[in-house]
Image (tube, rainbow, N blue to C red; front, side, top):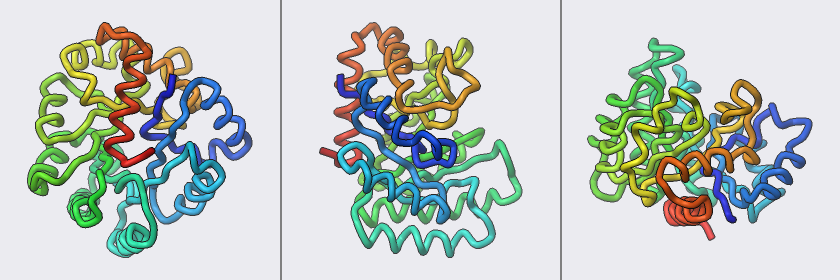
Length: 256
């Protein structure tokens, strides 16, 4: 099987001691494509270095994470725009809204997302959206920007069936990760009626490891656990889910 991890921070410091081994484990597990979201200016060098070491497996995005949005966010977004004009990237991201950790800079987060939605359209790239306790607010900004050309994925989706349908109606995919394996993760209610054409698989490593590794460092080699959970929920074979979600990722991100 060829499985695609559509959202993995494999360049993270948490893989400093075994990054190459983690990449080997991923490939051995069938995860042969890994798409890497950027966080902010501090993560660019490590992300691009990993992409250069494994160019047939690892593909970089370029964006500013909502939790990295500060008072100087416009300066960081100038750098994002410069990078987008300098070389190809798989997507703008990860961008979005996060009301879980801190609400004090929410206006700045919203403006940073508006700018990155514009950049996605300007460079004809998908946008990868992080949304935590801010689904309605994120949907509102995407609706505001949607002109028929905007596309992307709500990564780490763990919402309701109604929220899933809202995302799909916007022309976006759902990124399904380790939360789908959690007992009260909600995937059993949201996913069974959702077509495979709307789904991507992801780890969001080193975060949100699937059961039975919950609470430990996540890595791309664990993605088959998510794959099998999604296959069970949809009544499909793992092979079919792997093929469909990889095809979705390659089409969305312009890979291959």
